Every structure is written in C-alpha cells, then in structure tokens.
Amino acid sequence: MIQNKYKILIVEDETNIRNLVATLLEMAGYQTILADCCLSAKTLFTSYMPDLVILDLGLPDMDGINLLDYIRKDFLTPIIILSGRTNEADKIDALDRGANDYITKPFGSGELLARIRVALRNNRFCAKEGRLPGGRFTLRNLEIDYDARQVFIKGKEVKLTQTEYNIVALLSENCGKMMTYATIIKAIWGGYPQEGSIKKLQVNMANIRKKFGDKPGEINYIANELGIGYRLK
Ligand code: CA
Figure 1 (cartoon, helix red, strand yellow):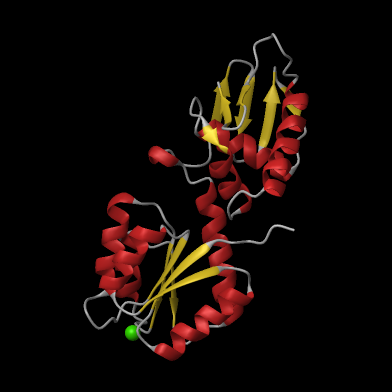
Figure 2: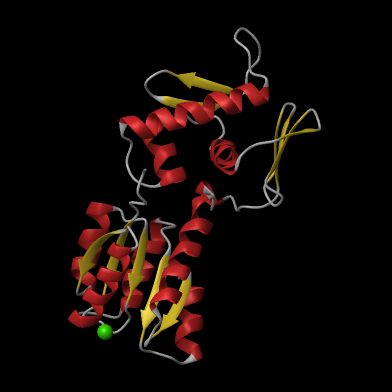
C-alpha cells in the first residue's frame, strides 16, 4: 500500500503546540518539517517545497503574514493559518492574502486533519498557470466537465474510476505538456514513485487509453513516452 506521504511544513514557535501538531500529522501518515520562526520557515520552504503549510501568526522574528506573502508571490501551496488571533479582521486579512483556511487556537485535532484533507484535495486540481478548476475542457472529440467529473468522447460518456478521472483531469489541465511519472504520481497519490506506484500508474493509464479507444496508428489522445511520462495531445 502506498502511504500518503504529503510533506507538511509546520511553522509554530510554541514547542508544545509544534510537537503536538507534528505528532498528530505523523500519525495520520504525513511527513512533517518543523520551523520555529519565519526566517527558518522560508529556508525550509524553499529547500523542501512542502505540499502544505500550517502557519502560526505570532512568531518571534516577524509576523507570520510575512511568510504568507512570501509564499503567495510565487506558489499556490495550500496554507492553513493556525493562530491564537480570533478577531474577524485578522482572519479576513489572512484569507484575502491567499491563506486557504484559518483555524483558531485551541483547535480540535479531528478538525485540523479534516481541513488539511480539504486543502490538499482542492489544491490537487487547482490549476497551474492561473486556470481555475470548474468549467469544461475540449480537445477534438474529447470533452471534460470538471464540475460533474465526467468525460465524454463524441458526446458519449466514458465511465472512468475516480483515479482514472483524476489522471485525465490532471493531464487535461496540463494539456500538451509532458507529465513525468513522478509528477503524476505525486499529484494523484502523493509521495514519490517507487516501482509499485509506476506499475499502478501504467495499469490505470492502459485502462484509460482502452476506454478512450486509443489504438496504435490512429489519432490518439494520450501519448506515452516510455520511461518518461504521458502527454495529452
Ligand atoms: Ca505563536
């Protein structure tokens, strides 16, 4: 079984809370990276490129908002604020600056985990290059309805499993771009490719291509570059 190995950066100066959150996330199968101030968080963010950031606002060197702005300048990485500041103005400010969610202390562990799952899920298809999820995608006879999570070829629905759909949606949002095995595996299952996960991807991809009616020597939707990845074209 492939474990959910999303990397989460926890930025929190209070040792007790930092350790509590870290233990909670590790028990839920996440990898954690820990920072106790903004400066070290910036360094760790740049070197580890985490999948999500949990950010305290009251930090010893500067306000956590600085880190939020720093990340949002270049990245869509989900950021969940975990702060003792309970007033609405702080929440709105953080959300306006691009935080995905805001949780006030004290927090419930179940709630924190649920919010993390939502943020990771929403981000998965939150499009690169500024395209937003939702709407439709068309390529020749292929049509995708992102809201309904349905795929059609020549107007006829192609029945895909959830995983197959997620792969097709990912390829469509990066249409024309060669997506490496590692990129697809990380986006669909989290974690890094191992022999087992590449095999799993290949099996899913073979099923998708069969359902799409892709045949050798004809105009196909999904191109495979052996040993590298796949491209929707
Ligand atoms: Ca603090």
